[in-house]
Image 1 (cartoon, helix red, strand yellow):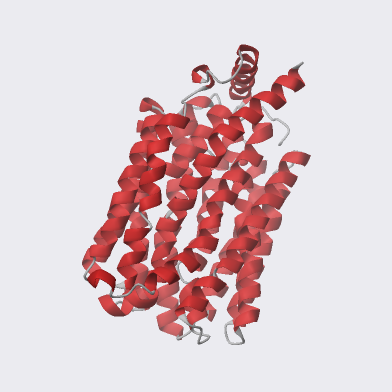
Image 2 (spheres, one colour):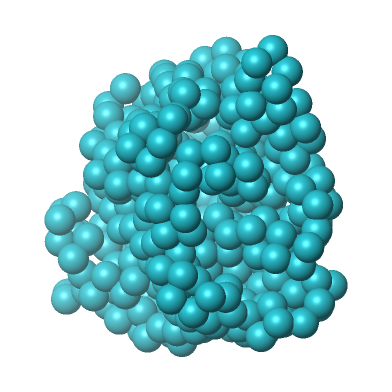
Length: 432
């Protein structure tokens, strides 16, 4: 009987929430990285060097880090249904405002406001997943969420590159069309959020009473069994395990953002046209989606988390270093290396979030997830800055990619150390 309730309930939950949340994440990622394609013409128009472009691109993460925990605290009070809707409307309007940038100062301000608007979305969804998906299903749910969102990596290049071709239409520059046109899907999805999302299983009229009771009981049992359930929010955040997992997430971010913000500019060095660059960036993005599906499904099927995180991180780190070495060669070799890197780095993302959410109790979950993600997203500012500085220092993107790859590799090495630690007085349980 429980197996029937298990299958029926989780199928309904997944079909109701994952398509919408995944599409929202797609647009969210698009809003972060479309600037990398816009930069092909925007940098010249605004007078930006690689270093100042990195400063502006990374400004998004100043506010993203500062406002993430307050945003998630608000979410836990007002509920995901209202809060995610407001966030989607705000980031759509702020992203469109980037088209008004006239120089480095206004570009930085526009990116800062966009980060403020988006701050609560991802940690809000991660927390939302803990309210609806038991741990046995959470890895697959996060895998689908990440995979659908990662489709933005396939879309951002071709769509944005074609929007660049509208340069001069209605007196608007091509790079401005990138920001203006890509806001429309955000606002459209925002209208669906209050109709589809619900805050807890108790609000799910579309589940039968037995299905609802099974899901509520299952989630409550897991909250009671959480290793860190006895810790208050502050103590959970500063526990050795959470500190190391936060560092792992930070290092992963260097790989994600160091590659993401500069891949089009790197491919441009091979003499490709803007349109060709846009289409070729979709190849690593597709490899990333494959990695998410492979590692998240395998992790849930076996119940093993640690080595399903270590393996893709080592693959991703080596791939980025190979990409750095390939920059002096030909475009096909570099694209293949970036595809390997994306397969590993992206494959690690849905698996990673199973570790902190399994550790945190109900009290610490929302703030703990926001803390890990906010500190991790410091890399969103630091990585573009570091890549830009290393590029301007060395005259090539080879050194930056070698450094980014090394950081991702270190993240993989740290994972087993983090998962062996336990907070004081916590019971030792079998690591899932």
